[in-house]
Amino acid sequence: MAILRLEDGTTYTQLSDIVRELAPLNVQINCWQIGDDPELRDLLAQDILSDVEKEQVLKALDIYFQQLATNAGYQERDLIALHPSVPNLDTMLSKFDRVHTHADPEVRYIIAGEGIFGFVRPDGSQVELTVQPEDYINVPAGTEHWFYLTALRQIKAVRYFTSREGWVPEYTDREIRFRAASVDLRSQSLLKS
Image 1: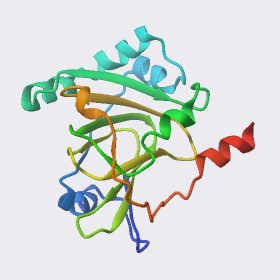
Image 2: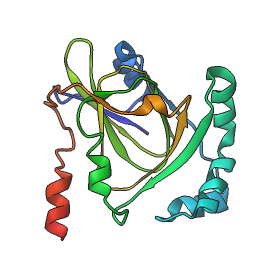
Image 3: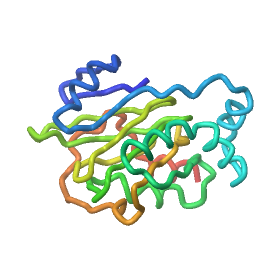
């Protein structure tokens, strides 16, 4: 389950506390069960998935997509699988590790691995939310945020879209003062080379 860290060192792990702390941003967080299907669990344990395997995973979890399509007009979904052997991983991630917004909501369902969303709250304070398997997050359009991977450097997430045009990052140039994980991914990958 998700972990929320505040700048003052306070950490929340209870969903109700996290929901309360993110309420001023209208960020939605919930727990969506993956289930116990052994075939699905085996696929989620693999680093690399073929397009056919990705579609198997998506179909197994489409109950959530159908709900979003019916209730909120979502039209597309895909599966992103990031891991250390993805070519140009750091370059891909660098698009999102600065404070930015999107014209459309950023909706993710984490099904394996973990990542960190940072947010600028209305009072200017910053928080970071570690998302893990079975976490569903909806970041509203216009919300200042950033994203990076934890030291695990792996995540699988279903991404939901009303359209892909509004999902381009629009950078705000606001400084990130707070990084709970304190991980410099570029330095880390240079040391491994």
